[in-house]
Image (cartoon, rainbow, N blue to C red):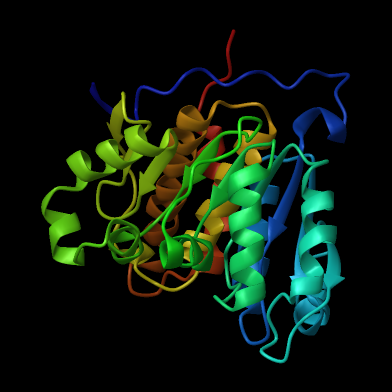
Length: 290
């Protein structure tokens, strides 16, 4: 079934007696030396996406910059290798921390070193809670192909741009762009997950349903905007949204924030850190359930 993302389910109301624990605990496994911005942007996306608590796991060299960028999330450093990426010693403590979360994302700014690759593959195969895989996380999965997940693994959402998806498929970017809906749906069906294939008219599919996002503009073609999207989708998963619906709503909010922002900033001047500032206005256009 092909649908448009205007057909979103009504938002649940926030109860007066709720608290931060009501809206989920997000963990973002992100960043490395020189790539701290991706971690920061994904954290801001998760905060503005409505998560109750947002934490970031980062390699030790990235800690000071990520922790100093925003006081509303929590940051914990883990051992790093000489490349400034997660070291092998990070694997067990990060996996243990992730298991207590409501939803997790891995990949933004992580790099693709051996320590990162082992961490990504372990989280993908075993983590019992919903997991979003983006950016370098996708490249790590592409290095050895997607292996079957364990029976207790939670829902998975992959958020590739066309070139990242081409690596997962072993195809060219041109081949992906020529058959976006069909390839995304077949991949999602085969691996039993949700694909959010980014680009003009982002495709969201679980292999059975296929939706195309109508929001967004060319201003999003700038570094870091995908990291914000990762945070938004992870926050929605943490609040209990099913994977397909979380990807739908996340894509809509992300694109709508960009559409609102360019009215004042223009498409050429839009940068990724602008998006969290307009997410609140995008949320206001959605009606909660009666």
